[in-house]
Length: 439
Ligand SMILES: Cc1cc2nc3c(=O)[nH]c(=O)nc-3n(C[C@H](O)[C@H](O)[C@H](O)COP(=O)(O)O)c2cc1C
View (cartoon, rainbow, N blue to C red):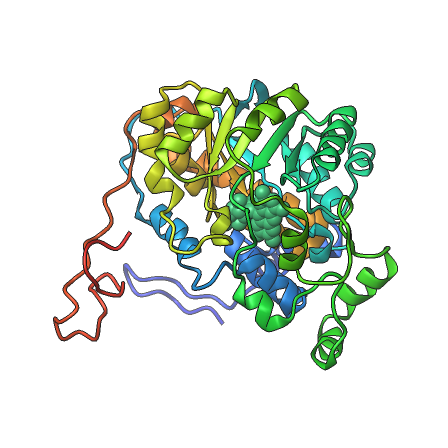
């Protein structure tokens, strides 16, 4: 039934199938089931939510958690949230260049997939899935000393990847040297020496969950098998979940760290590292300006300003708050990377704008891995790339160096209100009140 329209009004008609059909059908989904699942995630936090559903609780918490009260972890994120952008307008941003070089090698984004231990616990394909996705995206990936895939095995699986090797200095120097020789022999380009783990951080979530390697079968674990059957089937049918380079006797990660890692390492040991490794060296875990200066004096090629994603010492300063001062002091004498809390392309733009040559990510790609294996990591890297390019365009910058043309600012942290203002110890900005400023 079609009615006549009043003069100047809208003419009505009955709904017609050929108008309705395109709305009901939509574009045909493509890809495998897993690819379709991760394609429905539109941000890294979406993938985190998916990961939480798919991985056993103890595994998710091992990735997601930090040390003690998780203040270091929260502060790294809060500093990124404080960043303000001041975009240029009316610039031609039809084609922008998000690519850069990292230690002289081309990279599609100012981004490195950082080292993370126990990666096969998150998904049975572990490091191989991460390395393949990194290779496809044109980004470097650092294999951890605590990895679950061997140095040579990873290289054989992904021959063309730009692989870095991350070392924790062991008490046994001959064994540390043997690892470096294996990495050099397998064509790993760069050594990352992590210096913020003299002892293991206090990971309360792991302690409460009884997280061990390999997993300990208790009543709770058996219940969890019922909730995450595919994780368990994959874990039990794809070879033992064990450290590839370290003794895997049963115990917590902290037990392993205490047994193997050398807490007596000093700056003097960097000379040993320099003599043993002929390629570029990156020191990861620097948290003071003077330590950054010392690393530069020793002659390393880059540092990572990092509080280990808040997994080691709690109550540390956010790496982002340290970045502008370090950049000013180093005056371009070596590359500076930053990590902790990077969850979007806008975060990468923020860190680069404030002086980082590149960012590292840990949890972001591990959420993707838990959510959907290699397809999940690919999804994370695609999202970060799209977001980074969009942020550049909206900022009116056309290449990575232009991000440092005054478009990114880090206002000082808001001062806390006095504690006795009658507001139950919570400031206007939602932070607890207290003396001084809240970093
Ligand atoms: C599950 C997990 C395992 C990690 N293992 C290592 C490691 O073996 N070696 C290392 O240098 N850093 C390790 N890290 C720290 C990361 O390299 C990186 O500094 C941190 O994850 C950055 O913070 P983000 O996770 O918020 O990106 C690990 C981080 C996570 C989340």
